[in-house]
Length: 248
Ligand code: SF4
Ligand code: F3S
Ligand code: FES
Image (cartoon, rainbow, N blue to C red):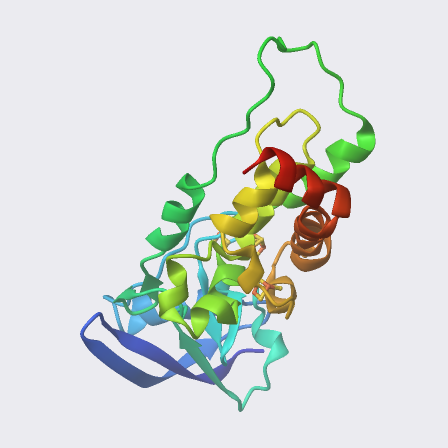
């Protein structure tokens, strides 16, 4: 049965804004995005929200619900009590454009900074067979829908705007790890992760993994293995000696 739900929605733009209270009809089986759409249809026609698939696959509808980073279209109203106030705010780590829509271009900048897959010269399409274990490793990372909830959550940039220059965030460190683990990639991703993408700033809090709607084990399967590879290279006495002798 339907009921009247209580919502608090952030409204404003780059110059500022605040929370506004609304009472909106809620029906069985609905998700928070349904409520935002009903708000637009009945009370606030100009409420800005970014969405596309309503199926948890396009990664557009990221926001914060009661302070927790989530997809609006994958958060069922049934997880809240009927008398609970549901607060919907834009992602906090990125600049607000309007209402629930943020400017996520930081992520596109960081994506461009990861050099593309680089197979060795002379390997023609079809010449190479990957073993299943290598396929599965990168397949987990490729489930990413680029919702940027992990980027929004990581305290390294959420609480420190100044780190945005040097830190690419969990999503793009994961991309570097995916390429590093690819048996055919010939670029040096280990030094790149540390020096270009700020891997050292990640202190493995795992908050990124906790909010990933695709349940990708970002920390355990991408970030920690990359840190291990960096440590192996930097502290392995043979590698250290090699660097001393040949890289002066
Ligand atoms: Fe979203 Fe997960 Fe991809 Fe991060 S890794 S952008 S949380 S799907
Ligand atoms: Fe940030 Fe995830 Fe590391 S939240 S600190 S990137 S484990
Ligand atoms: Fe596509 Fe929510 S609308 S993920």
